[in-house]
Each structure stands twice: as C-alpha cells, then as structure tokens.
Image (spheres, rainbow, N blue to C red):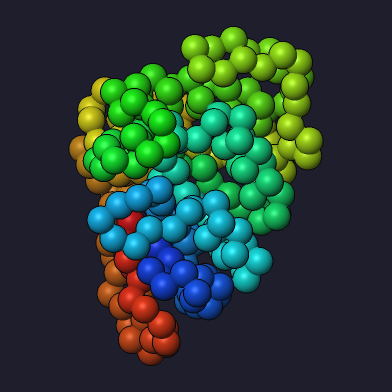
Length: 225
C-alpha cells in the first residue's frame, strides 16, 4: 500500500479520555487518517493502539485508522490477528495495520517475557502467520513460537484480501519490506512529487486548525505527509 499523495494524517490526543472527540474533530476537518502508537511501558503516557482506535472507530464514519505502530513482538501472533480482524469489522473496513519491532525501551520486553534480541525474528514470524489468517483459512502453520493447525478467524477481517499492512522501518534492510509499506514514507528521489503535493496542503491545514481548535490536550502529531 502506498499512501495517497497529499493525504493528511492526525495522531490522536495524548489525553485518552478525549479520543472520540479528537477523532471526530480530525474527520470533520478533512483528515484522511487518524493514528495511535503504543507501548506497554515507556518514558511518557502511552496507550494501546487497538483500544484507542476502536474508540475512534465508534466516533467516526469516513476517516481511516492506523496503528502507528503496533509493537508486534510483544503480542501472541494469533491474538494480534484476532484484534486486527475485529477492529476491521467494528470500523467497517477502515483499519490499517502498522507494525514495528520496537526495542527502544528494553524493560517493556523484559516485562512481557520476550527477549529483546528476538524481536525481529518474532515480528517476521508473527506477520507471516497474521497475513495468512487474515486472508482466510483454515490455516496450518508451524513456526518457532507459534503452531496453528486448521484454524480460521471468524469473523474474518472485512477488507479483502486483508487490511493494508504498514511496516515501520528505522533501518534500510527493513525499508519496503514484503507485505507492507514503510511508515516513514517513500524515497524522495522516486516520489518527490508526492511529497510536494502533500506539503502544499500544510498551510491550508494550519488555517483550519486555527479556526476550530480542539478543547483538549494537544495532539502528539498534526498534519503533514
């Protein structure tokens, strides 16, 4: 999946009691996408992306919903698949599944019982299984950490063949990984016109934000490509 040129995204307010209001506000202003990151534990206040985006789904009708990013290696793969399918159902097919390996805060991996050095391999295995489950079963899968024999997700994800998958990458070997697109954008030498189109909308977006300020905590990110 490549983000549409000029698409605008909005990361939901840090005050989680204001999620529904913030999501409606972003949709009414014409944003294309609202997003939530997550951590189990971190240096600041962090939510769970699936819960936050479920609340946003119930408050909106059009805007797409992105987990940016789900720290996939701390989840059992089949649980993550179930959460993705369920959120895609309750949002009427508006969920984009963004995944990352995490690792910038090792104590959360220790708390989850996941060796931080295994996070890349665990993410690769989990994503391979999740994509197969989302695309329809029954699925047989024998991995290092997960084994599935003839199981299907029911209900399945609403989008076919599966919700879009974004793979967050801070290292070049992961950039453009199979099955997803990097959340950090496209190589500027190839898609420079896309960036120009997106940036040209920033001034208009700032004007709209000034005209309709949100009466809650400041968002963690507003606007831009």
